[in-house]
Amino acid sequence: MIQSAITVSLVEEARGGPFVFWDGIADACEHASNLGFDAIEIFAPSHDTVDRAELKGLLEKFNLNVAAVGTGAGMVKHGLNLTDPDQSRRESAKDFIRQMIDFGGEFNAPAIIGSMQGRWGGDLSRNDALSLLAEALNELGEYAAKKNVPLIYEPLNRYETNLITTIADGVEFLKTLSTKNVKLLADLFHMNIEEADLAEAIRSGRGYIGHVHFVDSNRQATGRGHMDFAPIAAAMIETEFDGYASAEAFPIPDSRTTAEKTIEAFQTYFRS
Image (cartoon, rainbow, N blue to C red; front, side, top):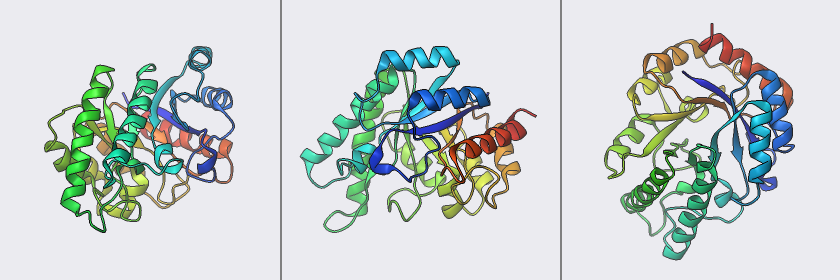
């Protein structure tokens, strides 16, 4: 069954970015629970900035799960990525992600690799960058398997990466990996830029999609842009996607309204 989730950012350097809640995990859990969400998705500065005992208590109190944990702070705060030409910096990037995998694993939540994938350019060719990315995902995917969680890889739009930008290309890339523990994140905002047909793209990712960012064309809450969600939701159901549809959205006009719009749309498309 598809479940609902909503994002909370604890990274001050990313303030103004596409995360719904910004006032701490307790605040996010209370609002998410009151509105009927199943889980929260956490964007944290590092693995050790969240008090595990406190988080466990909040999840129990509000009957929530952790849908996923983001790793983007590794790029935002430290400038780390997996395709850096400097080997020592690549190793630092992998260490950061391993620590986030450890954090997420305590809550049965996968880590997401988005901006930390990096890009190619300069002396680094696209083929070499993809080789470095494959090497890292193979290593990190197997590390995540030891924690009994998948690793989530996110194709981004052309303005944020020049590596993998579509679901179909993501599927082909995953097929080249030796690990089978990496899944794709289908972010509807990025897909709105890169895909000719979002529903068909979802179908092309059948069996490979492990997480969905459920947002509209303008990266606001579902229903506040021009995206037609009916065929997209139908494709998610048809392909038997059973992960989280998570709102990684700008809090426009505010966090509460964004959350309300999201859960209303979720109920319309997946519970009616």
